[in-house]
Image (cartoon, rainbow, N blue to C red; front, side, top):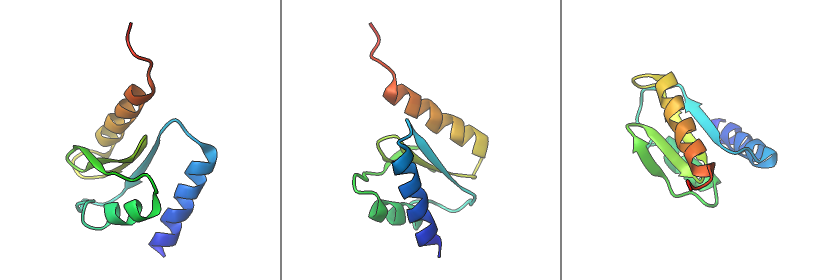
Length: 91
């Protein structure tokens, strides 16, 4: 059930073509054990990269975070990383 839901959410995000997408997983578990392998199987360009703690960039501008420590702080970190990725180069 969870696998179909995630695949549908990824298809919806791809259809909308956002500048960045963040999936917030409400768990304190490590994402690398179950969530990242599932996402990597669904995303063709997946190359998971750890940003900090359990904040991951799954593919370019596609992030997954969990609620461990502070969910808002984790979301702020991936939004910041995503905005830096799409920003023009400094002069």
